[in-house]
Length: 157
Image 1 (cartoon, rainbow, N blue to C red):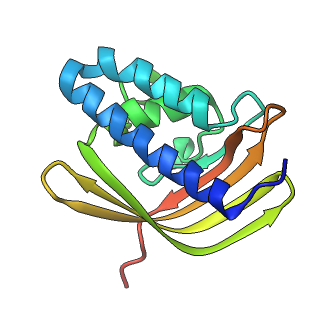
Image 2 (cartoon, helix red, strand yellow):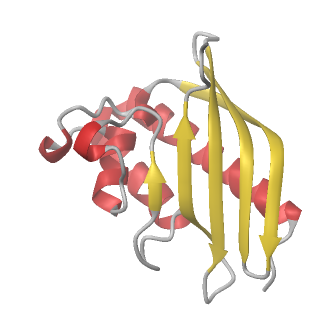
Image 3 (cartoon, helix red, strand yellow):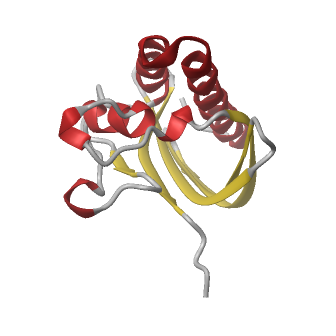
């Protein structure tokens, strides 16, 4: 059940497709349509059933910078949770395309890590480039699960 470079690439692609699906669902049916899509993306991609996920979203701050729980991650992606009042819904921003550029990866058996840039394009052609690190573990069924997700905006000196 060792992870391969192809597994890492497919997992990143699936994450990007999930983000785009959430955006499109929101545009077509509002939060009522986006929330179940986001829940399915989280359940399909992240390892919250394995334990806490080391998730540091791009636009989170203060006491809620880190999101080790599914609820915290869901709120980051789709907002509309009173316990996370500052969340704007990162996945609701009209994303249409996701590309990634690898800096480096590390694989050891059923654990793999990837670091690089994720480049997101929205429906108006706006581009957002984020520094990203994903850590994956294959679960008992051989499914890649995100157990580490760190994201930040590139430093602007």
